[in-house]
Length: 374
Image (tube, rainbow, N blue to C red; front, side, top):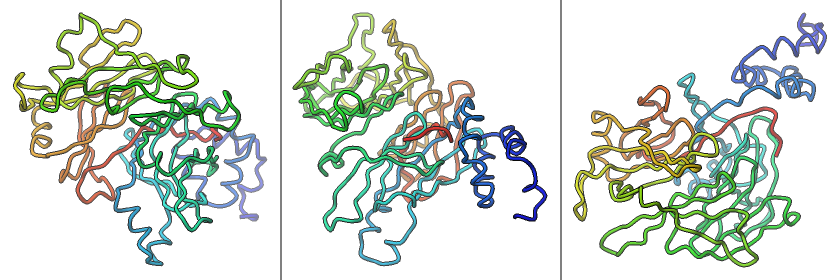
């Protein structure tokens, strides 16, 4: 590489040349050779592209069997390099980021925010399993280990992260909260006053939102609850039920609702099957996406899955909803592909989903940036 003509150009000139490329092409160039990698990870180049918008990707959580194989005792399986599959909706392409820079066994990505991926990892130094929650940027291959937690939190807790990387691990009975500023390098623990297990909780706009079933064993009745981060007390979280008379039967027409973050910090999405009747166990006619404006507390219909697309989900006993912002993704057993809703471009199928034999996968939005440090 030293004899190459490109090596004779001043670094400033090279920085200007490469800064004109899209972020996805810069990522490719970094893997060409050591010289390009050093050039495109230098502090000077990072500052030049610091205002570049992030690359909006979908990251898939690894299937459960992916991790069980790694604990099987097979030497070859244990040496598999960990990675995370991602999808670029703009280019309609799948690729993956290696996670081999992490000193952990079986990293399990669970959430993302502001260019960082959060994952559970097993310590490689301890004979017994000890889970740690880690924040990392797979583009820069840098990471930070958050304060130690018990393994029970990784089994039963849902990891939530907001746009300024405040972290909450939420269960039915308690919550852990970490901001890095309230108490230095410590988790704050709170008991919870929720009436039932929180479903699809979301941390956004300085509040946590969750659905709870307050109905009977025979008939579900969903309610929307919220808790402001400023209302966290020394011992417990103060959840309140959000409801307005004008909402009417909004929760009665949706079967098995889920929440996702909407576009920005003032929109919340609720997705579920649109009931065809109000009977005890009704069939659904399609999948509905509703959007709540958190400032006016008014609902509107954001999207409705086309009937020809919904037929594939009708035949499946189980499906998953994930994503957020401008895009929502749907997977179902034995389907082999994803359905995607784009609030600007509508509905389409995504083929080539990697690594999921039964077709049922989960994921989260990853806004990839080269300039974010854990």
